[in-house]
Image (cartoon, rainbow, N blue to C red; front, side, top):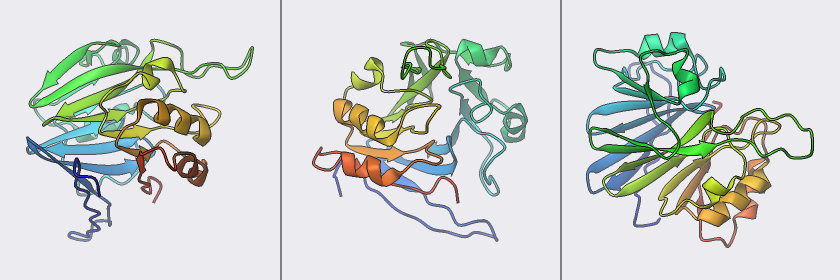
Amino acid sequence: MKALACLLLLGFTLYGQPKRTVEEFQTSGGAVRITPIRHAATLIQAAGQAIYLDPTKDGNYDGLPPADLILITDIHGDHLDLKKLAELRKPGMVVIAPAAVAKSVPEATVIRIGETKEFGKWRIEAIAAYNIPREPGAQVFHEKERGVGYVLSYGGKRFYFSGDTGNIPEMRALKNIDVAFVCMNLPYTMPPAEAAEAVRAFKPAIVYPYHYRGSDLTVFAKALQGSGVEVRILDWYY
């Protein structure tokens, strides 16, 4: 286990709620707990605050707290769900999203690629996320400058969530990422081998495949053998 992050695989059932896997990372500001919900939907907790990434109707939210902050990456239904935003709402809740999402979520604070926002002890940076056409004339599901990924910094640790993207130069150029969550699913993003190629370029200490419905994760893990990147696989579709 790497010294930079202490992992706890916690299976728990409270008051009849479903068993969940929680990843815990120690930082200089205290523990950061990350819980997979479904596909891209993720709960991030630290210092008594709950941050949701791309919460949608899919997945089980029973027993999970209301949101202090919601981060949205793109306009598609597997990332943006107005009903779920309303269900997670609490007084003072903040939503941060790219401009394309803010057209449907007027209260959202718009973040643009390269911009940063502060939320409590968190620093939130928007990273480019888009498709590179796989062949001339191929459909592009995610246009450049529409969606974003996020780098979330807390207590000296940097957590990257790719959003819907291909193996783009902006991802490959990332530096000092401690924990990365990287998408893979054709035809919408990229295949596992291509995702592994991107990960080899920016070399996070730990990587988790997410947003991977239908992908062969053994291909991803095998392609990263010997890279020095630790691959951890969670079930996002339980």
